[in-house]
Length: 269
Image 1 (cartoon, rainbow, N blue to C red):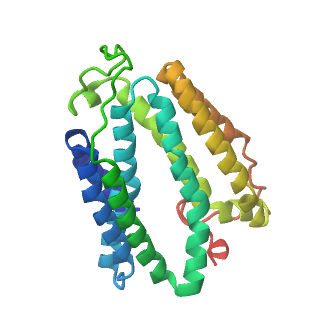
Image 2: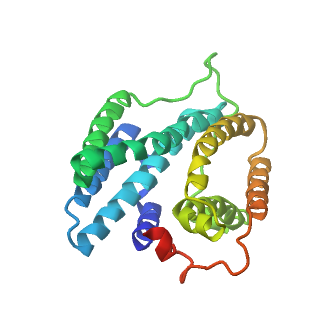
Image 3: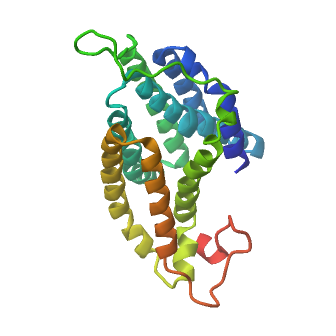
């Protein structure tokens, strides 16, 4: 958790180069550092090295890569920005569905260190390919060559954003789905145990979850291009609240973990 929080705080200070530098340059810097974090996991014989590797993975993996990709898409597309971002997000869903199984198979065949070496190699090779594709920076232009009436105006400064009255409620609204999703995925063993389910029950829901995530992502992209973002945000929060309220509660007397962020000993074993 400390590595995740440190990576998140560091991203607020290191994310601005995406707005100032071409996408190719950002990829050429972020991809090697992410690969270094992956390779450092193979050397994590002590706590200090493990912590440093996790910070690199969180900052330049889930942090900078996602931030750079969505920011660049928002800069390149104007009329169909929501659709472009939703289609790009399918790469995250594909990775979540395919890469864990591949990692388990490779770990069983060659050891867990081979997984991290393969991840570092894949990230490096992918960074080179993406940088080659980004050799020419894309700039959106209307088909008729006229000025685009939907082109974004000058952006706000970092000091202006926190002073807006909508910023902090929006921050809470976007943080809630991530918190709920991580809780369910990280503690599925405990959630199943306290309800008397076998571990195959939550695992069997993953394919359905992946299909619904893809469908909702594509549909949301189309809606964002046609509806105000505030309407979509309210709809997303209400669906998350409805899902939490409809989740079956554990029976009375069910054993709870000693700490909210720790799975039960039986489940973890």
